Amino acid sequence: MKSLSMGFCAIPLLALLSSCSDDSTAIASPVGTALSSSSENSSQTENESAVSYEYAAASGTISKMNVVIRDFQPNHSDFENFSEEAVEHLDDIYNYVTRTGTAMNAFGFGTDWYAAAAYHYTCGNAQTIESGFGVAIGVDGLPMQANTSLPSYLQQTSAGPVLEYGECAEHVYSGSHQRLLRGYMNVSESLNHRHTCKRNVWSNPVIATTGMVSSFLKFTQKGTDGQIDMLEGVTISKMSERCDNANFDQWFTDVPSVNKRVNAVLELVKDSVSGDYVFDRGYNNGGFFPLDSIDPVTSQWVMNKPCDPSIQVNSSCEQYEPQSLSIFCPPYNYMYASSQVDEFGQKTSDLCTEWLNQGGPRAVNSNGSGHSAAVKAVEAFGSKTSYLGLQHLRNFHFTMMAYTPFIYETAKQVPTPQVFEFASSGDMWVFVDGVLVADMGGDHMLVPASFQLKTLAENNHGCHAGEPLALEDNCKGASDSLGWADGSVHHLHIFYTNRQTNGSEIYFSIFPADRLPK
Image (cartoon, rainbow, N blue to C red; front, top):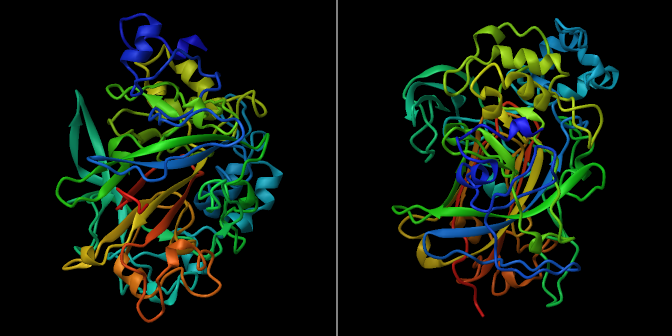
């Protein structure tokens, strides 16, 4: 596989991987080597029996969030189902045979996938919403019907019209390349979001699949200090069967032979104007691929991102190799395949064809079964173009749980209340003190969500009898009449999944704790 790691710069391989990578700790590695995330090493010491985390890390212009990433193969039953395409093209996909004789039903789109058609159709999208699956999001970022999975004080609805997201008519230059942009076409001024277009080339309605998860988290493990372990002892539970979540219990749990775990750290950057801490990775700046080291100049995949062994549960770093390409390549005779271009305006139809000839999106590597069609397509393409394949080779299939504490301060809610903002192209669920506050399930266009801390505080969010953390320190001094106590510390959990190769976008703007009470 060395052919995938050479030729980016006119320098030796070892120097290349430290000079061209976006990761200052990069080391030489072929595609198949099991290395992991993250480049943001923290100061924890190695401990095989217990991992030490630094929960509060906001200071200056950078804040750090602890995350647990679980890497999956694209042939997992809940991943790469092309649910929206299947509504109109189920038989086309099942019966598709490429020009070289590769049958899609031999590479993951076989009888099991075909028999689950009704399940695929429960994902909310433009094809299924008229049948009652999915909830349209309005231009103000609110759902267009009440979400009963949320507390009553967060069940506001939008009068519409439906928010739309797609390709922008305007573009920017990234180095020597013209870069196409994506964003919202008709977003309301009331939705304070950065991803907007002045004009769109195309756009699709933004539709989420709500109601997939239970409204409460479960907290089951305490540390040596007697406090709840906010990373190791947290469980998110499935509430309903929909949108290909049959094996949801595997998504955020360590399951040998099904997923590989990486503990990592995300760095949030402080906005100099608003003071918010922002994490923003999407189509317009390379996407969210926490398990990949990517050359920031050429956008080429370099290697699996190294991790910090000292914060891993078993002091070792493991992940699968990248097994997908960041292009829309549905496994049938897609009518627009020949005219598709990537974000740099490069034609991708031949690369897509080669990927399908090698087995397509669900053909995996030797650590699973069969082979990685994406890697083989990149190898076949390497001598034909200037590394177009490497520009799109990515590890797409993973889940992530992120955690940070934050402090509620009454004085900071005037004159304008503090707002937490989120957006995601994949399933995302946000909990505060173990109670759901944002429900963005499904595979979809970029779905936004937001809430004011003042609203949570005034409604004593998470501190009502029977709620998961109602008896913990976050609720000390709180009451239904007065709400949260000033200066109280609360807990934010973000659950994110990336199950489909049509995008990997995540955004959040929050206020993590820059100090914690002694």
